Image (tube, rainbow, N blue to C red; front, side):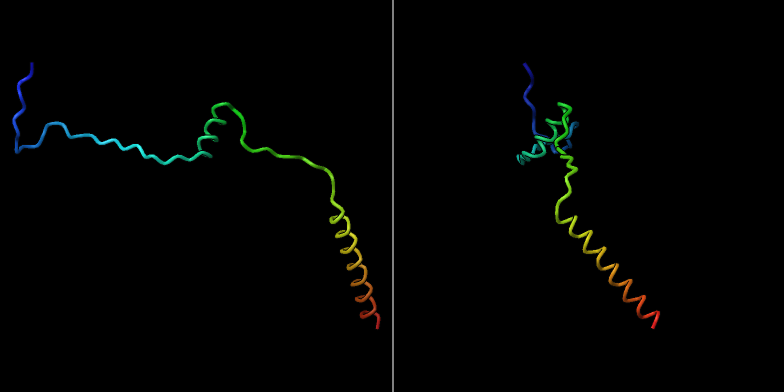
Length: 79
């Protein structure tokens, strides 16, 4: 049995520790950590080699503009 502790005006020999655990929960962070532990990457990349029709049209439009501008420059230089 221990002797009762008497109140004292002096500083206690050991400081009291305070541990606070926040209650905030981030589901995405938990999922990322779980995937890291499993060794899986959370990002999935798709490789497609299919060119869209808009890209084809853009190529032809730029080529057409270059031809027209070069013809105009040629005409201005000759005259």
